[in-house]
Structure formats: C-alpha cells, structure tokens
Image (cartoon, rainbow over all chains, first blue to last red; front, side, top):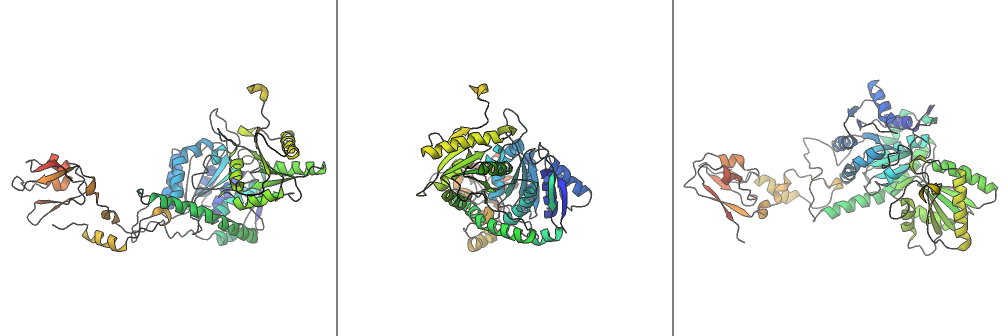
Length: 396
Length: 104
C-alpha cells in the first residue's frame, strides 16, 4: 500500500529519486535545493538506496559526473537551482547531444544580480534551448510524480533526452504537504531497469561517445535531437496515461480549469496554478467568464494543446515568473509562435509576475484581469507586456 | 612497411555508416583512420637515408604515429596521416629529416 507522509517538495524529489533507484547521484548544494542531495545521501548512508553518491566541487562537475555515469550506461540523478543550473549550462547541451537520459530536480529560483534566493522560473526558462525536457510541478505530489514520469519518458528509446523537473523555491521546496509515496514494486513495474542500447561501456563493444562532428555531420546530429524532442510529445502522453493507470493521478501537458465558456483564460505554470484556480473560483462566483490553464510540460512545448486552448478563449492571458530581457515572457513568446499561422486566434496579453519571490496575490490577479478585460472589450492589445505587482514608485 | 592501421582502415571502409546515430555515437572502433589528416600538412618531412643512424627517435616521437619502420629499421613516412608537425625533424640527431614546404 502506498503511504502518505507530510513532506517538503525537496523531500518528495529525494523520495522520487530513491524510488527510481539511480545508480549514480552527483550533486552540489545550493539554496533552495540543498535538502534534495542531503536527503538522498541519507538514503544511501542508511543502505536504503544502493547508489554511488558523488560529492563534487561545483554544479559543473555534478552534471559532468552525471554525463559520465549516464554515458557508462546507468540511471543518474542530480538536483540544483538558479546559479547552479546556470553553471551547468554548457554541459546541459552535451547531455542532450549525447542523448543521455539524466533526470534533474530544480527548485526554481531567481538569477543574480541582484542575488536572490527566492522563487521565479528564470533559471529553467533560460535553459529552454539546451535539449532538456522541462516539467513544472504545481505541488509536492506533482514534484514526486513528475520525476518518475521524467525518467519514463527520458529513457524511452524514441526519446533518449535528459529532463528537468521544476518546483517553485520555498513555495514548494520548503513547504510541507501530504504526499503519497507509491509502492516500490509499482514504481519498478512503471520504470523497469534502465538498459540503454546506445550509450554504455562494454570492452567487448568499443564505441566513441562525444566525438567531434565536422560541418558534414553536425547539422544531422542537431536534427536528430530536435526530432527526438518532437517524438517526446507522444511519449509523454503515453507515460501520463500509464502513470494514471498505475498510480491513479492524472497528468496532462496542459491542464485546463473551468475553460468551457470562458472569455479569458489565464495560463501559468508551477505552484501559481494553485493560487490561480482558487482565484478563478472566486471570480466565477462574481460572474466573470474566466478559466485557467496550467502548462505542466514546457519542453517540448505543447503546441497542439495551446492551439486547442486558444480556440476556447477570446483572450489568452499569461502569468509568468520570467522575463526575456528585450522581449516578453518566454511562455507568451512560445505560445505566440504556436499560434502564429492559425487563421483565428485570441488576443494575447502577457503578465510578468512574482519575480524573485514576490507573492502573487489575488489583488495582482484582479489587476491583470482588468487589463485582460480591457483588451476583450476593445478587441485589441496595444502593448502585450504588463508588469504586475511592481512597486512603480521605486522605479519611476 | 605496412600501415599498422590497415585492418582498421579496411574495416571502417567496409562497415562504417554515415547514418546518424542517437548521440552521434561511432560504433566502429578505430574508424577515425578513414579521415586522412595528411591534407592538413604545410611542411612535409623529407628523409635522407644516407644520414640516418636508425636511432628510432623519429619513430618514437611521432605523435600520430605516421612513421613506421621498414624491415631494416629505417623510418617510413605515411603521408596519408603525417600533419607535418616537424617533431621528427627536430628530434633527428643527424639531420636526416628536412621539412620542405608542400607544393600542390
């Protein structure tokens, strides 16, 4: 029988790693993710997890050790956040290019400067082109579940790409919630052993990994990585379906909430989806035709699902904890690209919220609604980007 | 002297596929020998057999290795792979190797 325990998302991630039985874990501590390797090292020290725990001197080394271990053919795990993830940047491309299904947990945290340890998504969003799949958890249970699902998809022969699972710093990483820990046997059935056919070390089968590719071959390699990410869309749906069958919890790339008959649909990711749904309930009671959508899978970007969602709304309003300096929020930008050739599309507005751990309150959502309503009424959007909850008196 | 890579070259030419593999993994060991790096050369080692004392220093120092020894112990230069680095000429105690500009 699965047991229920009260735990932080960091602990849930460590439990997920324990259940997935990686053979090598290499990690370096960083706020807010430190507890994850701490907890895993406890599991290893107690003999509850049979794995090599490598203490490294930086995040660059942590992910490099995972690349080495994964290239040798074993399941690996690591965790980091913010500056640590940024330091991993170059190796992230290597993990994807070498098609190593490493899974990594991220306590989504703002990037310096100024230094800030609190929540936004800038760290993972900034890695969106690396070839890693990206999942975002709304709560601690999702953090655990999505790590298991990430392994399932990453190790699928049709995919073979690394995956990161993000959950909001402090809001989830350090907040306790009841979490169901699935039975080990069922997880074993779900994941199976990692038995790669491509990347493993065997003296009887000498191979070259991570070799040089001249202009005559590099582009083909990049194409196959892109193609694998495209294939991941279907594999993710299959993994979600199998997960639901085995564990009873349903996941979708985009989860909709009260979107039927909605004029304005607010789109977000992570823990903000919880706040948003509660606020939608309140607004529905007040007579507003609003709905919500939560993006669980950001890479591969759910293009088809965004198109379906767009058909249901007159205004799509994005609430996102990241900003591309020089443009808009990344989720808005990607969704715009998904809809660009649709003959009919909703108006789109972007709301930059909650950077560096600023709470996103109902008042702020009301402010966003006012702007979205204005767009709906006027039938146009002059400037799509809106900074919500900003203390204007400090910057004007 | 015969190239020690002969078997590798033959195998790679026969079995190596250009088809992209997941992770761009190369499954034929030693297949890099099909890339004839001799075309990178600017200076070419020219060997004067009369000056050679068969000390083998060129053979030992060649980083490729693109110098083999013939039956009598004299060096043979494999211009398919010699990149013209000049180490052999530099190490040769009797100046039996001279680097001359490639003319193409």
